[in-house]
Image (cartoon, rainbow, N blue to C red; front, side, top):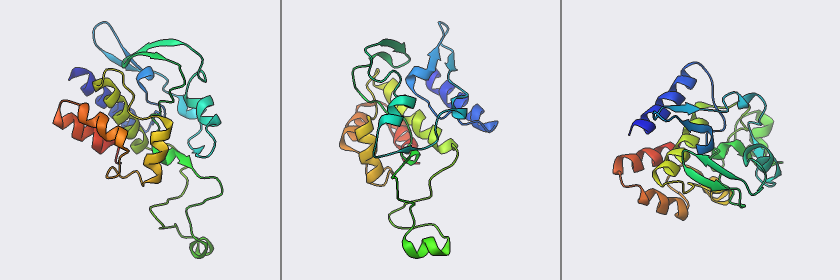
Length: 195
């Protein structure tokens, strides 16, 4: 579909010049009357945090949820949305960290190596293209499901706890992916969420 193609090319163009968006959502994808896609909020990577604590959603609500649950009607590519407490989350799981946990076990910490216990990695200090690809997968799911969100904050935290490798998708996300009619688009979205 033309809109999907434009979204993919727009994000690729950003990455080709070394820019990661950091907050791709349907609310940041604009559509002209001629069906041209524009991505807004480019540049937010300079003032929004790269990582957030996974034990306290206040920072996430402040920086990424918008108006903190205020009852506001917004129109976007994905349809109509209400700020009704639904905590839609399009951030990649690696953007969350557990405070007090470095991802290293004690012996590796002394040696200065990275931990290897369950796939834990160092806390990222900058945005990566893979983070945007994950977010774009969420945007495409929402687009193909006529505005139904791909993940809420709880689903994302469950996905993160299970390893976030795509083989352990939350049941709610599996059900949503199954609703996408095109098997190729369903596979592409699943792949984007497994990066």
